[in-house]
Length: 220
Length: 110
Length: 301
Image 1 (tube, rainbow over the protein chains, first blue to last red):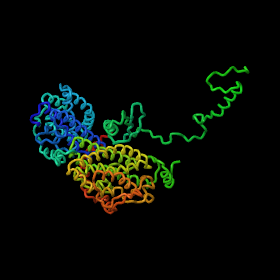
Image 2: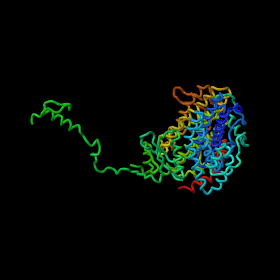
Image 3: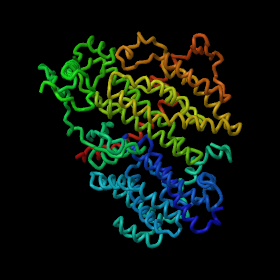
Image 4: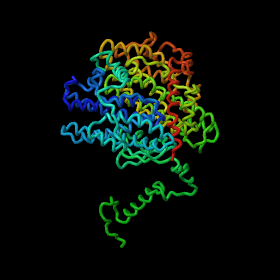
């Protein structure tokens, strides 16, 4: 199904898969974030990401004559279009998790801005709605980025950004890469490109789909 | 970490009411968390977030009244008896009790 | 006149008097409040651990969102509750230290494993229902800051039970296998549920009722739970693994097999099937993020 998807649907699946998997990874901090207030805030962000994924899946599902849930959960692992960046298992490492949030929000702001100008009205409209919800994400990511950057742990945080930078670049393409470099203040390096998956992807997919696979076609 | 108190306004024009408190290291975090805790269900239209240290707690707002201050209260006035007397006086002068719907008849004593 | 002796204080709270954070209170009242409220906070926090696994495994986007929101609420409740404890004089880090060290308790139900998506439905529908009965009774707690947060907690819990019921209904109207998951989960959760409200101390012997911290006896809560939820269970064609369970129509009292209260004590004193593993998980996560708390504290404005 997805190997024959038209380019604009493939774009939707990239966006949807990115948001779903990042939301999944962000959910891994539920209950174990550094302190309770942050736990609640981080969980909110995970929910919004999954909500955005759902919106993208629904748009793609209409094009492909299927349902959002089938797209989200019933594809084979190799059919997912997410960037390796979102698949990385970072839990317990707060510096890397914050670095990922900040880099992702910066890249996503560029993507969403471009989508708002799409000549596909439904997508442009969706992008505008998403952008409004993203304001909180940017606030939150910026607040942590700022605090860790000027903290006694700035070395640890800078290291996390260094390690994740090649992956972050893989989120966007073409001119958006140049814009991302400007926004982040880093030079372009060889990116970890979309199209491959990291080692931990198969076990993520397995856990994500295990209940659903117990009763294929079941109503939950 | 400091404690911040959050006041929320439920609807436009409504008074701000205390919603609860949270821990945060600075204004940026306090704002983010207040929005999360008191706004994620769109249950508030506005929030005031104040460091607890800035809140002046006043436990006994009024000195116990020692002197009679009934001139400040509605129940400090007993109109009923005096009103009855006034109406009776009007009736005695004019021979009829009016309902106050028209000016009094010319005072025969005038 | 504000109470100044223990006797005056007891009379005051028993007459419905409310206590605020800076009011004078007997040491015993403060100590009992802290212990009780802290146990509630611990329970909300520990309850997150069995549930969070299922967020990752949720079989639809809607279920994923609903479960994430439910668990988020529970963490939020823990925050509200520990704030109340902190204002009573016990810092949050100390509460978390005591929890991890096994010095403080949390409710029995959170010491048990979850095995299938059936557990997710049963927990949200029945465990949360049992908890809400106790929580509604706490709306009348003499300690006003706690009564106030209970109001917010009860309001937020209202969707949790509906979510639970929705999950269960989808499964009992689904395949044989799905029905089986629900029945199997119910069979496992019934005993812990029956113990949840604690052993039936009469209200007049319960110091928590005397101080008006609790306003409902344990057995009253259990009866309320049975009365509300057994009919709901039976109407779905599900069975309860207790052949003695029945309602005496004349007295309105539910009869049931006496739970094993020795097991209850054994579990809440730290010997449940999943107690050690979950506390260790908490301890390890907390240690890994200690540097973050240090950064936050160091830079506090």
